[in-house]
Length: 111
Length: 114
Image (cartoon, rainbow over all chains, first blue to last red; front, side, top):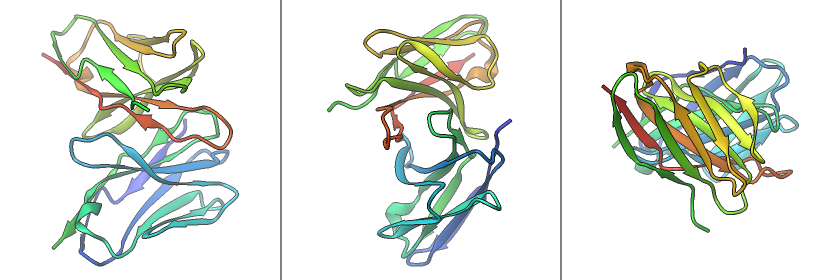
């Protein structure tokens, strides 16, 4: 069945440095790739998403890249700040189909 | 607009019992999805309802079921509870219209099975 692999499971970066989280997906028909951020004790919230007709999308300090041929996509956070500490989930789906999430990456921003 | 709400927020049940969780979506949202969140498995898709019909289903046993009412509110039922069902159950609503696929999550129901 559909599967989304996410790496690493834990990531620690110095404040101000960049963080990269990578995901691969198995369903080649997937065409929607959202990223969710879940702070401790809070609900997941969408931070950025990308469609398969776009290779890259950026929103201030966060960006997502998509390689459809290799079936992988990545989240890039630049100039990390303490408030970026959270669990990040990637996901993949066909539009209007079930969304399959990765197992999450716990990001620690070190002072 | 009020956000997605879930009741109850916490629940303690015994093995073998059944439980019903409730989710009220954002006004105007017609799609409601349910997820099970556990520390080791992340967010696992249970099912999605749209216009009172189950539109998509994950790989969970038949003990997990749901329904959606005409006002888009949804309920999830788990019968014959097992210890492994202890988890945070999240529901999410979506506008379900072209160009808008964001899932808006509720605060979750923390279920503990003893």
